Length: 510
Image (cartoon, rainbow, N blue to C red; front, side, top):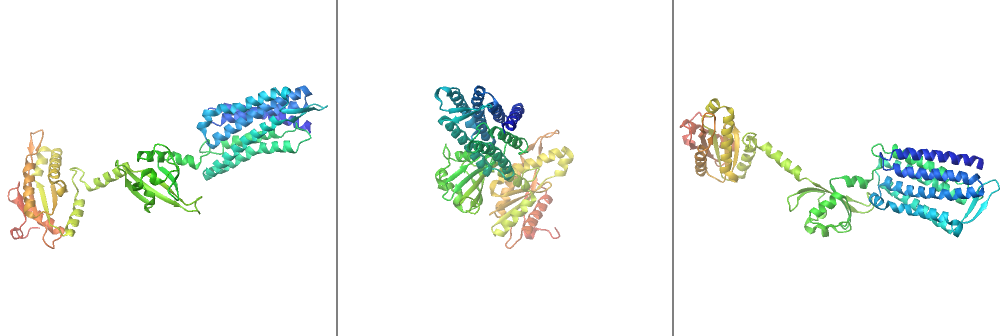
């Protein structure tokens, strides 16, 4: 059998060395290259030493047997390193404590080198007439073996946990990764437990080529979107939305980084909120999850606006009843929405409300049954202003007039551009007489507004018609009465305010 196995060891050593070289050349491309190079380097050393140990003289065979264990230590360290990077588990800790992985290789090399003195690693060694030796293992060997299998078990456990957390498209990659990791462990157990007649026949280094091949495939082709698989935790951590998982009692089980920042901004604890109850973190007044509303928009004390969505889990859809809370800061979105809504209600030139909004407000006021007055305003000789000074000056006149009206009316009424140079003002709770007095004040104030032009300063005046909502009257009738009064003001010489009096309205007017 050795005539077959020895060439296989040599071929495995050469293949592993080639893998190590190719992996090392890709060390700037992927974080998995260095660990894979370490694994295949260890497999190359182990396989080559195994080949010499099987056929060489007893002295050389014993030296080769001792030389294979640094390769074993390299494999175990590389295995742990590779699994940690591949699964994304504790990468920061690995970078900080990666030197600890050197402890086992250094101690193992020292123990094997000094074994002729203490015989705690190889209790005895049997030489074979046809070459090679068979070592009989001591307590330190079994301690070393226990350490190796513990590290492999930890790595496989992490891989299984990562596979369960992974998005569905990456679970197949983890399965291939697991099979590759278990192959040499199975070969080593077979060699130790079944191939007892000849300890030099060890399948482990050869099967590590299977591991390297499958892991190389998983790294190169198993994840086309990324070089390493993505877990749900990684996806949630990358979200800008705050995501929190609560149990049935409102205790925070998990929170992504965005949630931790949000809780701190809302007055939560400086440290981690995991393990604390929602009410204890933010106070009962902010216990949104228990309000019975699955989606709501809330405002914080500092004026920020948050969209809160609650998904209640049941034992059928999760490991236990609980709640997933997703909070998104929509302050800017709400500001833009309010701005767009306001723009839809405003006149693009003057900034006061448009005719559509005026119609809506007017119908609401009429339906309320409260007293209401309307003032229709028209800029005097506006066509002449445009013809003499240009449309830019005409626009400036309208803008300045609208600003003056809006500032004078304030929140007491609604100012809207009704069309062209015509404006309308609604005054709820005001009768015709009071509305006429206010309109005259506006007329005087606006007549003092000066607009600069290339031909000198320009003062514009306006005419106004005032009407009061009659009992049982409609919105259309109110505006028609005010418009008729405006017609009379213009007929009487402009720059004046006229109040609609039914018996004074000439017949035949529209």
